[in-house]
Image (cartoon, rainbow, N blue to C red; front, side, top):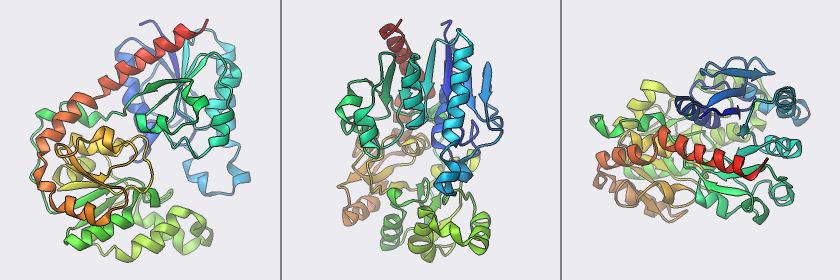
Length: 380
C-alpha cells in the first residue's frame, strides 16, 4: 500500500509479551498482517521487543509494567516520557503517514495536541476517565475506534463524535481453527485472565464448587506471573498488599486454591494455553464489569472451548447464545451455574468455525486498513 504507520504500543511490556499483555498481544497479532499487505511499520515500544518490523522507537529498554505497583509520584512520568520520545520521532521525519495509538489517555491527549494524523484504539472502559474524554478536543486529525459496539455506546458523546466504529479483537489461534481436531475434553473448566475482581474469579470458584467441577485459573496476580514470585513478594514486601489485585487474591481466591478442585497455574501461553483451553469443558467469563474487548473469549472459541458467562460488555457481540456459548443475566450466579451444567450442548466445532470466520488476524487487519484510509481522507 506504500503507507508508513507508527504503531504506538507503549512502554509497559515488550511486543510480543511473554504471556500476559492484552494490548501488546493485539499489536503482535495486527502488525504482521499489516506488513503482509505492504504497510511499513515503525513500532514505538521497549527495547526488549522482538516483533519483526521495519523500525523500532524505544526510550526504555525493558517493560515498565512491574513498576505500576509503585507510588504514583514515582511512575506518573513513565508514559509521558515514552510519548515524548514518540513525538520527537514524529517531528524529525516526514515519511510517517499515520500513527496508530494504543496508549490510554496520555497517547490520546499528546497526539491530539500534536495535530498528527492518528487513529487511537481505545481498549478500556471509557467511563473511568469520563471528565477527560468528555472535554477532549481531538482537533481535526485524530480519530478513535473502539473494540466493541457496547464500549462505544457508553462513551461520552464528544468521543463518539470522533469515532470511526469498532473493530473486534483477533487471535492467531483462529487461523485454521476449523481445520484442527478438537482435543478430547477433560473435566475442568477454566477462567483465563488477570486475577482481579472485574474478571469474577470469586464467582467462578463458587459456581465450580457448586457443580463439583475442577477449576483452573490462568493469569497473573498483579505483576506476578507465577506462584513462586507472588509468594516471595508476600513474604518480603508488606506494601504489596496495597495492590488491589493482590489483596483480592489473598482475601477471595487463595483460601480456595487447594491444587485439586481449584488450581492457579499463573500466566500461560503457547502450547500450554492451547492445551488448557482445548481440553476444558468450558471457559467461564463471570465478569462483573462491562468488558470492552474480550481477547480471551476469542482464544477460547478458537480452541473449540464453549464460553459460559454473564451477558454484558462485549460478550453478547462475540458469543452466539446457544451456538458458541451460553450467557446468563449479569450477576445471576444460579443462572450461570445452570448454564455451565448444560455446556455439553455447545458443539466445540461450531466455536472453532465461528472463530475462523470472525476472529482471524487477517479480518482485523483488513478492517484497520479501512480505518487508516478514513483517517487519511479526513485530513491534509
